[in-house]
Amino acid sequence: MEKHMSDYSKGMRVKNSTRPDWGLGQVLSDSAGGRVRVFFIDGGEKLLMLSHVSLVQVEGDEARSLFLDNLVVEKSVKVKCFASFKDTTETFRKLFPEGFQDSYFDKWEREYKLQGCLLLTELLDKDDFAKLLDKKEFQEICNRAMRVVNKLNLIFPNEKMALKDGLKLENNQQFFSEKLYALLYSDDEMKSRFNGFASCLGKLGAAKWPIVSYFQFIRYPEQYMFVKPQVTQNAASILGFELNYQSELNWQTYDSVQNFAKYLKERLVEMNPRDMIDVQTFMWCIDPSVYKEYLDWIEKSEQKNS
Figure 1 (tube, rainbow, N blue to C red):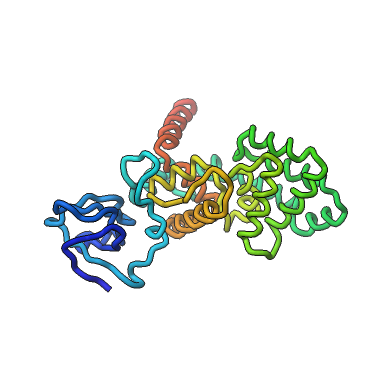
Figure 2: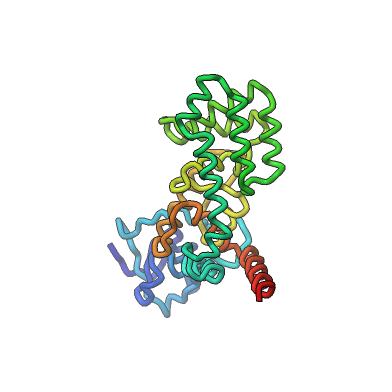
């Protein structure tokens, strides 16, 4: 349902009838002085003169949007303005012109992560994991888990060390083994499984976002997103998505990150992302500082090979 308006209030969903390519928008603040600030899904943030645009209020099913439901209205991270989705894909394609199918993308960003996925499946698949639990071989489970953690560079060395130190105590080994199995293979609801594993990491002194999200990410990369706090927050702030971020492990933040990742995967459908490995790398590459660092690295590599 659409209605033409002259005044617009914060939170209202609108479309610009003269720029349908901008898609659905949300009013960021009440209109005043003949102007209104709107964020459009495909157009980014705009400050519009009402005398020069024709905005239409949208209601009902047409106004539904997971992204706008989670839009950051008051920016907590310093960015110039929210970027449009088109802006971020253009930034990504400057690094990888062929998108997720770019040969350099596979070589630099994907292949080594798949090795981590294969290692976890090899060492801690459901049946083998269950057998180890039945035999109470908790130390062996922890040793295998640390091999999986050390396979990739996604977790900081100090965070890996905290987990390793926490697993030296026998009581912690059993607790960790049981909670990790539940996280990966239990039929309980995900919130309960996540909270149980987060509580376990707290007991071990290793309650960090990369650790709590790592095992699911590499066991089920088609479904779950890895949480690297700075990378994830930067991507969300660039696009204006509310993560409800807290440094302490909590379900709301984790669930918000998963929703953000699902939204990105759906919006990136034309680029054919294969899984959350692709989406996680996309998040990393749209950060302007990473973008510049990558371009400098590519330039140096080309000079070396010329």
